[in-house]
Amino acid sequence: MTVTTPLIEARGICKYFGAVTALESVSLRLMPGEVLGVVGDNGAGKSTLMKVLSGMHPPSKGELLINGAPVHFRSPRDARVCGIEMVYQDLALAGNMRIDENIFLGREPLRRILGFLPIVDHKASTRQAQQHLDNLKIHVKSVSQRVEELSGGQRQAVAIARATAFNAKVVIMDEPTAALAIKEVRKVLDLIKDLRNHGIGIILISHRMDDIFYVCDRVMALFRGQNFAESALAQTDRNEVIGWIMGNKIRETVPQGMDLN
Image 1 (cartoon, helix red, strand yellow):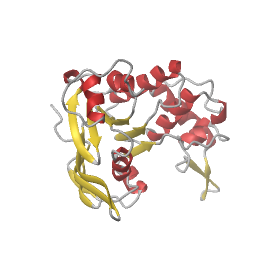
Image 2 (cartoon, one colour):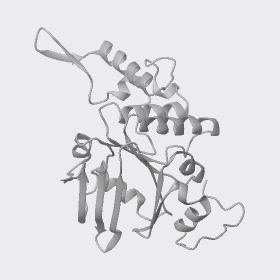
Image 3 (cartoon, helix red, strand yellow):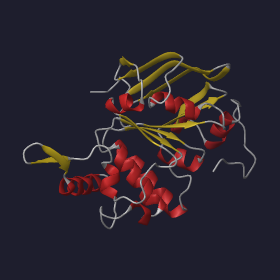
Image 4 (spheres, rainbow, N blue to C red):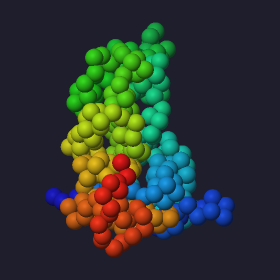
């Protein structure tokens, strides 16, 4: 049976900060197991839209729907309860803590001693973290490693593992390969592809055309806080998408060397 209801849908989202209009009637939809690329120049409204979707900013106007039902997020916690997780560019990992501790930070498995006193169940944390990494095909020496000992790509993988550890339906990623070495970029992109097999929808914010065209199913462009253009990846090319970012809908050849990597 074909799924026709989006995991998350934004309809006519507006966001005003005083006299400044950050978003004006922006719409977005994401289907299960889909990777949607969101592109736009600095100031186009990408980050503001993602903060609305993840519960950090309430929309000034418009409607958010999860599986077709209207929702109102008062905080990121509300969004997480609905299965919306965001992986920020700075990852927000605790470097001096272990991988398993980072994955379960704030949501640690507990056991009770003396029948009533709750304490962290470290054995369960280690076991469940390893199982989760195995399911995602993330390879580390040990889940007991401190995050500060990991490479950039491994840290990004741990951040993604943390975001997907509690039945996430939608994961929003902000420039996930921006600070990575070339050899680590493909591993992270392959991990994003693999999340589709788990039915998770991904929203990928990126300036890197290589990333967009390697991993995304569809791309939408924002320009000056509004929807500008949208297409399945199979029906467009990087020159056209770069043109959208610059505010040009006419398909033309971009000068050689002009890319947003």
